[in-house]
Image 1: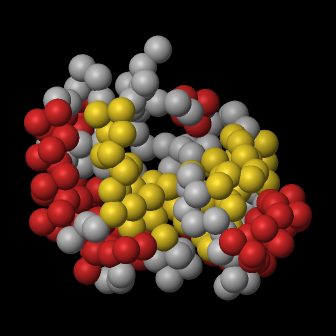
Image 2: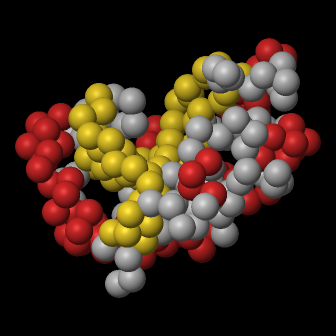
Image 3: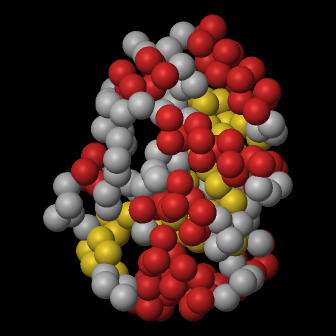
Length: 202
């Protein structure tokens, strides 16, 4: 298959992007334009190094013993990894079923992308931003309709425990009360795992 651009590979991450020791692979390309994005390099289609699934596998397999011993693996982030379904499917065929593959995603992608990758992935880290559509759009530049539909589908078609939802406190965009409301809405949807945190804005 064609190569894609990857803006970063970070090894030996412990329980920050999934279970066990993980390697974070950040893809270029994102549908959102978040005001405090930490990877704005992913907005430039020319940035990053080109990789085929084979090249990536050869580079990250050096840590296979760590992955197998700790139930770790590779977390795909970005940018938006759900846009790279064919690449991740091919990567899974190379690494086999024992590595844990996780997507760190906004889920703001067409449903077909989620449906394609769901049988391949072991887990999701969903950056929900805020459940309030107006706050979400003000912060990201896009509405959250696809995000909500995709999250609802994932919750209905698999173990909710495989989904960790990140709910940030975003300076100048949401309040403590609004974060609490987001958490309550997500719990009502069936979300069981949360990462509530504060953005540190420089």
